[in-house]
Each structure stands twice: as structure tokens, then as C-alpha cells.
Length: 71
Image (cartoon, rainbow, N blue to C red; front, side, top):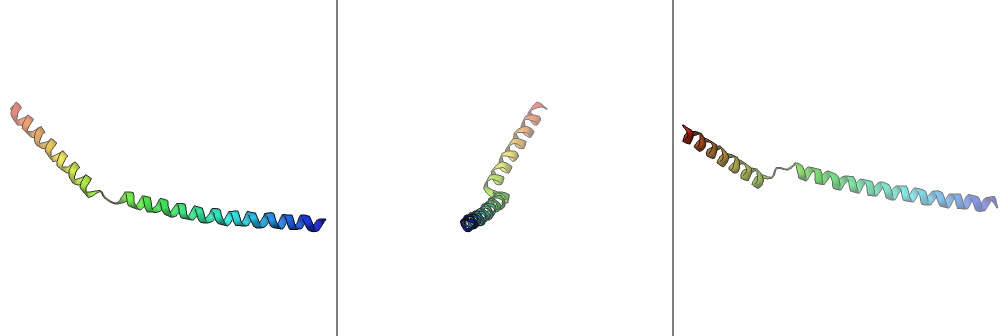
């Protein structure tokens, strides 16, 4: 009878260890994906930056034109 309980406990322990290993692998994989996404988000977006700089320049020109018009 004790042998059966021992075998059941051993089986449950092995299953728990297997689940823990699987969970660890999934966590590492998810961490790697998140790190790649973070690295990608840190890269500069040159087309967007250039467009924003262009808009900023145009707004400054408009502002200067309006200032000169008032004088």
C-alpha cells in the first residue's frame, strides 16, 4: 500500500517538475520576445522624425511670417 502512495507521489513530482521546466522555457521565450520588442521600439523612426522636423520648420516659418505681417 505504501508503495502505491510512493509511486503516486513520485509520478506527481515528476509531472510537477516537467510543468516547471516547461513554464521556465515559456517564460524565457516570452522574455526574449519582449526584449526584442523593446529593442525595436528604441530604434529611431527616421521618416517620422524627418516629417516632424519638416512640420516644425513650417510652423516656425508661418509664425515668423505672421510676426512680420503684424509689424
